[in-house]
Length: 434
Image (cartoon, rainbow, N blue to C red; front, top):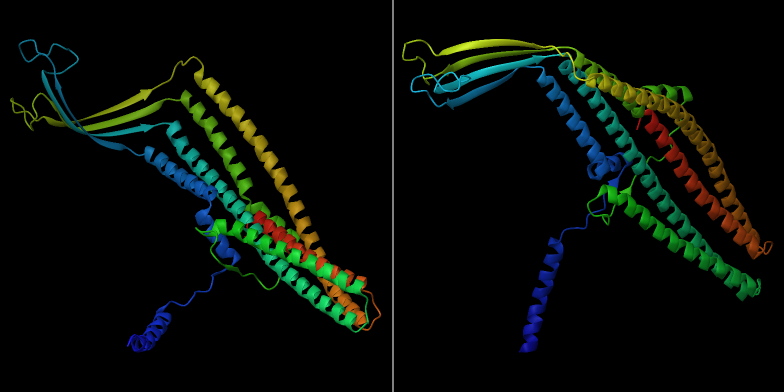
């Protein structure tokens, strides 16, 4: 009976297993990441860029606050003052108006001066500096992502080269063993081929490790979990190099370091103006409307209106501050001179970076073209050497040398590709086109 029960339950269990397998979600393919997507993901995860973005937003709020300081401020002032009396309505403190004093007024205050006006211009210049620093941080992050992105792609290609070389070494070992069995080659050829195969297997293990490391370094900037699987997608062809005239024109108008230096110089000039503004008077305007009386009521005991208004205009003229203003002006001028030196250095550095980056990209492009031709030549040389060895006209050393030449040229081609792509990206970052 027990056996019959088990047999009866078996089909049901099989159906349940099939239903569970059908209901299980299908495995999703890893996402394909382009360079633009990688840059976008890195901006959301990199703390340095987040700090620069926060500083830029804060500087914009500072500019809004500086503009708001030029506008009148409105407050609703309420106060009750009790002063000990003298036995009558007169208070003992002559500075107070009555024994009981009620104040409930809406007050409008405004201060007009060169310092307040200069503060708005300075806040705008500081916002421009923060915006340029944000662009510098963006380009720095982009350069990092570009290097890791193309480095990971190169690691993938080098792994492909290592797999091909390992497979080729294994095939050649089989060929030498077969020729030894046919008494067409010496055992030394088999030993040499086996040594070559063992070396290629070690190279393959190193290539696998390097690919994993490069992908983890890139994934740290892209995903919450660096172990997340992904694939990289890139353009099938390497983009061309722009002309020198176009590169120089773009670098002159779109370089954030130059814009930051120019904005910093403007800030320092405004600091000098703000320091000199202490020599000038400030005009303070005040308007109050409400109650300032001994009774908190619209009318007093005598029937007069308590509600009224008052306006004051105050002009403060500075006369003597023990030369503090003069020293502040000198401090601002000293700082402005240092900023001018920094601007000059930035301009010189931009010219040098432009020349170096364009020369690097041009040289890398020419060498990449030469490496592609060398790979084709080495592949043809290996093919001919294998044919000659199969015919008994070449030695095993010639075959191994041809294999090493092809593998070396393929690895150099991948290094040349990443060198050109990185140099081109750096040039595009310098000109603001990436």
